[in-house]
Image (cartoon, rainbow, N blue to C red; front, side):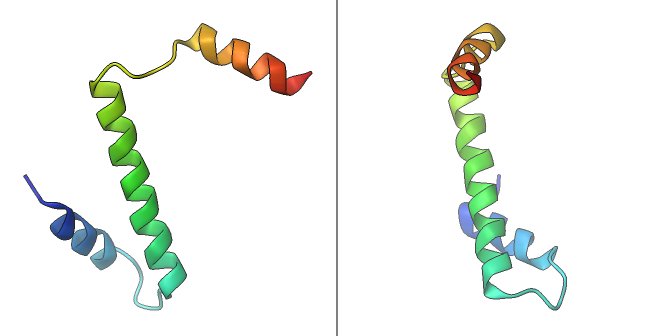
Length: 61
């Protein structure tokens, strides 16, 4: 299993050669949020489809 540093290095290697600092930071941030989301799902910290629909009803009024 890769550690965080190895994952970030692999992610950066996949970016195009003309990448800028903002693109690199965004890539790392997205990777971090995906990892966090998967960890939350593994812990059972998620919402059902119905719960999400209820929350969206409040926003879409």
